[in-house]
Image 1 (cartoon, rainbow, N blue to C red):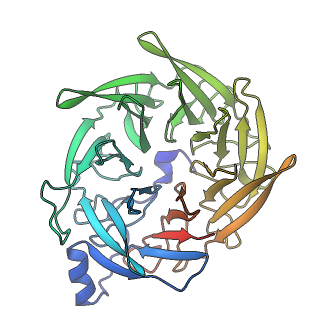
Image 2 (image 1 turned 180 degrees about the horizontal axis):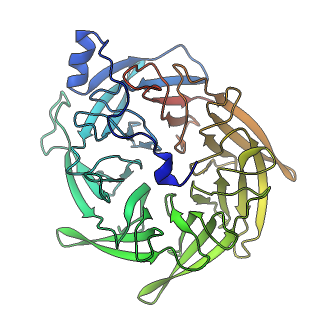
Image 3 (image 1 turned 30 degrees about the vertical axis):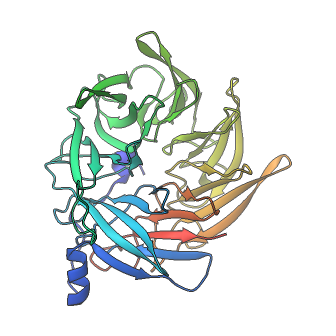
Length: 419
């Protein structure tokens, strides 16, 4: 597979439509509400299966959780206007209540490739990769001023930045906030050299001011940034570029504030060898400042790799080589004990994707498969990163499969894995 934009193979509204649902379900979907009964206690559980109707379909991104335990996410396609949706799943007795928060119209964005990030005001921020087939937007979603008890009213969307090309095009992944409330993200294309950009949006009066922090496409720094940017306590920004770089197959970079601008430093490059290549998923940091990431291809098992860069020295350590037909597209997460969790859209026992855990053990890491997707009702192609709650439960999305029949390969699911 290619860059982040090439991995989004679903043109909006292109999957086969079949109308086979009962009148009751159709009415519930029209209002954006479906109660999903929960199964018996088990390790893996589908919380919601998308239908490709008003609820949307193909959730590529990670989920966000609020203090009440509600889950928020996006579906890349379908919805009322065939441009994707933003949704919420609320715990409801033994099941979950699906709440359709917003359906993109195309004029205000389409194809939400990334998930949503919760701002300090409790509202949601995210991106769509396109707007009427052009360069995409950054948006903010707020609930209506007087939220009805029935929760049927759509949230209010505000486009806070519309990309034009020189400032970036095809924004991807989630946005991130710093302590001052400034917002950071990446665009997969565009910029001064058409290799993508890192951008910043700062609150300014009643609006937002955009600043392009870096344009990729020159020299050996890499192109096609595709992962959610990560900020450390000193305000340095870390990310990945899926192509180019000093060795030709991607790079990990650090950006440091420098006067009125930013300085980019390439921490490592990826040749096409056993260390892996094509680091699409972005990186995470531990408390010591070590950088952890994934590659989607290569490694001794052919299914990508998990790696670490030592803080300060940035020495590369290969932690694990995954097996399968396609490796991680998303960033890892780490628990308090230092265990790493991730997803692969391919691989697993059925080559339909997997959720895995890596546990440090002496000088190595132990791989545990938490779920191998079958491509049936449990879903297929888990493309986004995982969410870990305070009880150790994992939540994620699979972009295809599931029980919905209105999409050629299934419309995707939201799932939970309990310890």
